[in-house]
Amino acid sequence: MKKIKNSLLALFFLLIAGACDDAGFLTEKPDTFYTIDNTFSTSEQVDQVLVACYSHVRVMMCMIEEGTPSFAFRGGNGTDMFDVATIRRGNRFNDYSILNASNDVFYINFSHWYQLLAKANLALYAAELPQISWGSASDKAYAIAQGRFFRAFCYRNLGELYGGVPIVTEITTKPRYDFKRTSRVETYQFAIDELEVILNDLPETTPIGGRLVRGAAQHNLCQLYIDKGVALEEEGKAGEARSAYEKAVEYGNVLIDGSLYKLMTERFGTRMNENPDYYYANTVADQTPDHLYSSTGFIIKGNVYWDLFQEGNQNYQEGNKEAIWVAQVDYAAYKAEDKQSLLQYSRVFGPVFRDPMSAHLANELEDVGGRGIVQVMPTMYTRDIIYSGKWGDDMRNSEAVLRRTFLGNKKTSPYYGKVVPWSIIYRDGESKDAVDAAKTQCFPISCKISTDKYTGLKDGQNRSNLFRDEYLIRLPETILLRAEAKMRANDKPGAASDINLLRTRANCGYLVTAADVNIDLILDERARELVYEECRWNTLLRMGGTVALERIKKYAYWDDPRNTLTRSFNLWPIPQVVIDTNKDQIMSQNPGWN
Image 1 (cartoon, helix red, strand yellow):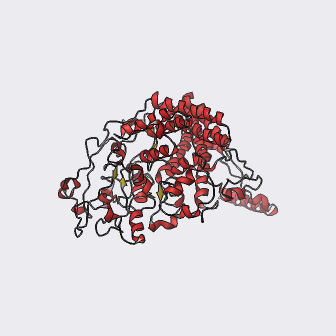
Image 2 (image 1 turned 135 degrees about the vertical axis):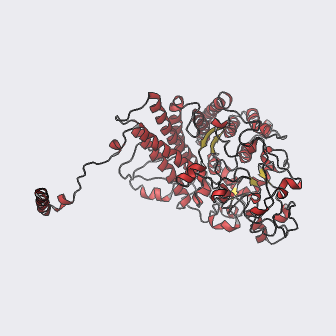
Image 3 (image 1 turned 45 degrees about the vertical axis):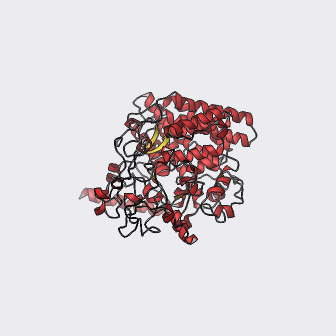
């Protein structure tokens, strides 16, 4: 009772005191106040921030968040390679009568990179706090190296897409409105400096997949020196540009010729003794041996390129020697954790035969690529033009890799169990609307976005998603970068030799000579090798000049850019909201977007 009385008395005096000082009464005086400086106490906590960086990259580069910003950045919508179907015209991204600096695509993408920068800067700040105890000096060095890699990765992408941007290297604890833009060359140089200083702190390989290795930095340095060279040329500094290209070749040489990576040339991995199997069936009950494609005499043969994209084959640790950096996508984690560990490729990129071809090719099973909703579709350039005249002469265009043969799966169709001709699929001779609907919803299916064996069907999955790890860097891209650097440094025979490394692996009869080498050849080969892998907007914009504009106008499916693309640009605009809110420092807009 005494304790209660004393407590009540204390509360009474506290209330009286508060009545005399309202402000003091309302001021919180917590026993503990968390700040960045005292939140971190262990190296494991620092690593969790780095894990958040990996997760952020995985979402941006692999998860294809379902919205126009992701369709443009990761899906390549609006480039020479990808456009939209008739049923997705509201998501078009090459109609320049409606595209401006206030478009969400530009702002959301810009914001994503600065959010990743904030995480990287936080990890770097926390790693240096005095209370953090590290297992060894090399552990700390590797943590810092990962943080600086992510920072460089951000600025490489920002430089390619937006040009010179504000360089932010410290955590921000209060609002700022005075950020200053750098030049495009300065942005690239910052990223180069970040990567070169950490090379020796990154391991050559790691026990488990997904973590950063030295090869990832070397690959990015190869690309950054090309980027820098192109930007220097546009400033009229040809001599400095030549030196940058030669430096890019040096980094390419180390990674391609002097490291543990090599092209896979023999079949390997989880399905090395298998061929893909497809049933002509629009119900699961019809998926019986007598309804296999092979039962009609049509056998699709697997090959090493197909192996590269089968579940369980993506990591260096799994025997894939061309895998340099791989995002980890795990079905067990998907089920147990946040339902985010998946690739929505069949859904986002997959065709919709079931609408325009309902009489012959119906439903959503493996034979028609799964449950596609065609948010983004390959242009005629991507699916046909780059293989014109050489259909059967490239492993990357084989039936296993880019399936072009479809057997009718409707029992009422005259093509049931028989090949449906493309003239029927594309509805030749019908109205323009019918042809457009067919051509934009029906197209060859890449093994990169679909499979004959979907994971999770017994758990209720519906053929929308893939559950395989995904390449962030694969050696063929490094080879194509080195070829580009050699071309720009006037070593066209060397560039041709590099491209032929990939064509030889793909069993191509059509090899390249020095006389063939130009920017268009490089871009065409990237389309063959890296379709659904590269960020095509980055590739086109970093080429400089009018390359992006010319190719978009030439290869877009719809006439939107041919009718509306009258401005000149080789950068996306700085988002207008960024310019408007940076009130204490004038921030210029990129040419062509004022």
